[in-house]
Amino acid sequence: MSREVKYIFVTGGVVSSLGKGLTAASLGTLLENRGLKIALQKFDPYLNVDPGTMSPFQHGEVYVLDDGAETDLDLGHYERFTNTKLSRFNNLTSGQVYQEVLDKERRGDYLGKTVQVIPHVTDEIQNRIRDLAARSDADVVITEIGGTTGDIEGLPFLEAIREFALEVGPRNAAFVHVTFVPFINAAGELKTKPTQQSVAKLREIGIAPNILVCRCEKPINKELRQKMSLFCNVPYEAVIEEKDVDHSIYEVPLMLQRERMDDLVCQHLDLSVPAADMGHWQEIIRKLIAPQNQVRIGVVGKYVELNDAYKSVYESVIHGGIANDCGVEIDKIDAEDIEKDGPGDHLQDLAGILVPGGFGQRGIEGKIAAVRYARENHIPYLGLCLGMQVATIEFARNVMALEGAHSIEFDPESPHPVIALMDAQRDVTMKGGTMRLGAQDCQVTPDTRSSRLYGAFAISERHRHRFEFNSNYREQFESAGMVIAGTTTDGKLVELIELKDHPFFVACQYHPEFQSKPSASHPLFRGFIAACHQTLQGRS
Ligand code: GLN
Image (cartoon, rainbow, N blue to C red):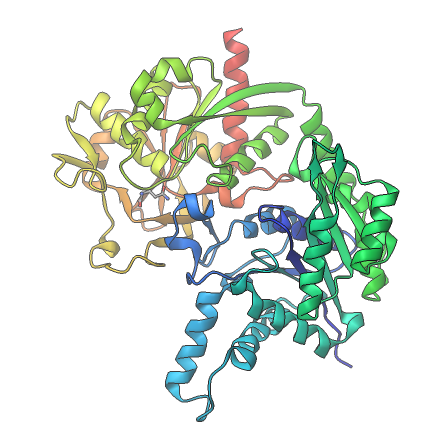
């Protein structure tokens, strides 16, 4: 008899930004720790084929997978919270669905039929759920539906999961609805009406949630739980409280475990598995709540007012902190403010400076000034992607005295284009999915800080860029003292640079932040935070 796969669908109600992704990822962690093999996927109702072409202001960070898929940032939570391996099959947008349906229509696959949302679009969505179940060999597939219940564009996805659940039967599908229970200051009360209405909206479509996850600022008392149970037609114990976390998002799995959400899911889906042992996770939280040490680092970027724009970077520095039993406070600094006020005002009290990835001219000179400040004042520096490119430009201008050195992304006429367009990018005209993307092998130079941190010479890291270190200048850089600490396996592209005689100056062309976990910090972040802490000790 074939094994029965169980399906969990996570929808969201009332408002966006409730942390559905975190809830889905946290449930994934709990189930994984109960010995189940899980798979996680995200459905995004917008029409873009992927978020790769969207501004961070629209969408937050673009999370890159090994296979080069540019995906929603919730996939970052999935990878950080669980051991699942993700690929382009784990993120589906309406754009992809329609592209597929229209390709089929043009090929004549529909044999003269009228092509419609039901059943053609919904079938395509369901295929992606089945496809992931088959590919992942998972016991439980968790599918998160982006957007908010009631959005027009989300309807085909909701219809598709309703039909899917009907087909697999009630013991094989569970609906989790993440909702918001606002605290109204003037009344001094939590209000359940938005939740009632959101659930009513779902039931109108034919979906009756089995579990309600209530996001709230204050605890939900018994009376309110009873009320939501009654009006939303879910058992009392299926009203789960998910209060704003005190310290860290990594508390969410423990919070849901205390509310017995995983027990409920297992009961509903007839899964008889042992309870989750979350001891290792508790240890992570202990280090986050009461670290032995504390540092404050600055992230100098362009989208600092948006928490989501550098999500994985912020998480990774926190992981670096966990690995060093060190709390990390992050000062988000707008590169344009450095241009206005000079670097000292913003950077002088920091234990470390980080410049993350980015695109476009705005704030570039501020980032270059931040690098200079870190280099000259011996403040640990970590540069990621654009952060390596600005470090290269700074070194060319101020150490090698190459006046006007720049990246041709920002100054196509630069007399010293130390960052140049990659050969493979020269004829690229389409913007979507055409950068150098995904995991690439890199060889780390022996006897460098990076090789000691990685403890390996062969590594694989994820990329997302069009421009690169101009190898025509490589020897000049090396004679001026820059260390080429890593290259592509053919030795041609520079992937990692370092400076000697500095407490920590490391910058990479790739994105290590896409491969860091709370339980296993990426080595570069671990090394960076260790250096920040040591430098601070040296100063005091
Ligand atoms: N804009 C730079 C490039 O395309 C850096 C990209 C990034 O930081 N992800 O090469």
